[in-house]
Image 1 (tube, rainbow, N blue to C red):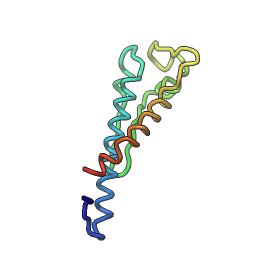
Image 2: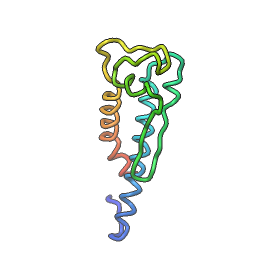
Image 3: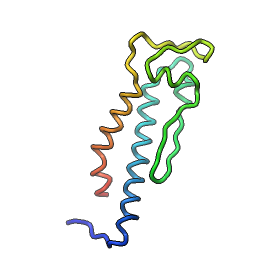
Image 4: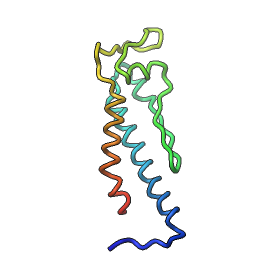
Length: 114
């Protein structure tokens, strides 16, 4: 049976469900990023952070060499760490983005039914 929602409560109900989906997607993306981050000292992996607001979420890393590593590029030694990606390494940020989108597609209906 379909859930009954008063017309004046649709906005609040929808916002709540979208917020749940955003939160879950950000947590999933952060987990995926941490798992895929190469480890030399562990500094890069441990530097992933997130902010989650009701309708917006962000996963970020402030280390200067984070962007080249997630893009599969080399970075200068002056940026710290010894890790060097291999030539032609697949950018794992693209993989995380695809995985997160797939996760959202698979879980949006489940969250809306809860």
